[in-house]
Image (cartoon, rainbow, N blue to C red; front, side):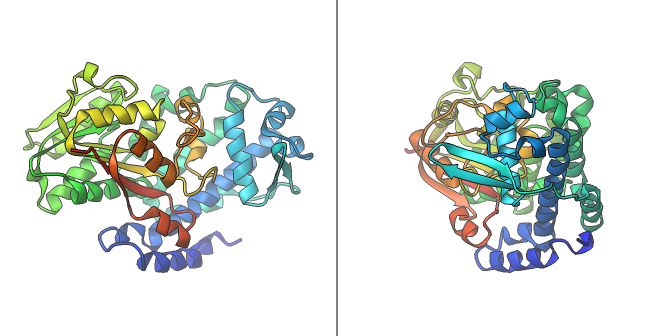
Length: 401
């Protein structure tokens, strides 16, 4: 396959479909260039997975149909960590018809369809860099993870060490950045949602899991652009990781030196907010970008959010959304290495497995926590009818008066 042509026609076709259903304010985020980058990255992760499958001899383990647990045993992988990421791998490969998913009364089994294709990921990476080099951080991160994936699956290295060792900090600085065209869309979509759903003039905002500050930067820059920055009275930036918190504070103070409403500090969303200094009914908006899906107990965290909000206050999340239950998406390739991502407290209705949630699961979880008026930007249920792998949405909900 000629990598220089990969995804061009499909990207144009998808953009044409989105043009008929997305509002003018967010349509530019999902232009042909972004959609093609999405398609290229999906192909890149697929080719990395083929290499990992060879390294762990998944092709040999999958010659006869087997459950994931049996594949783990046949391949000599670590039963304490491998089942969830391997389950995702075989579902991803089944979607590409490299494996076959067999569903019967005994559950799901997987079998390899034939020899693993010989496909070079470097050709896709080089084409992405020609197409849009701003996406480089996503490729560097994926390649870094891929090199250590076999060792992780065998239990020889912890996933958290692969991702968050001090030497990896530069990866995250580059990845969680508005200069990274592949990630910035999450931040900008969240910013548009806050502008649209801000409950009142003089609102106070608390951001959960602010990371290195790119979400807050995108939000405040958007409000300044639309001349609404004075609509917020104060901005409480919280982040649990000290190194991220320091850099986030530095970035925000440097970008908005005249804004006097900043406060900065740690906040663990898995503990009582009030015990950490967030009084009940004290916040107008609780905002988060790609954070709340890793709450250990989603129901508990959403309950703490509701208590912290004033009556009529808004929960506004920008999240990577799984279009359909168990649909494998490329973002999981990296984050399946972390225990918080793959092993939360489960709930039969809205949290049947770890990782990202579907729109229906988000709605069920948020409503169960006592919120009303749950809404999505864009209307993800409508969008996925036209683009089945559309992955990004802002989610809003109201604390009842």
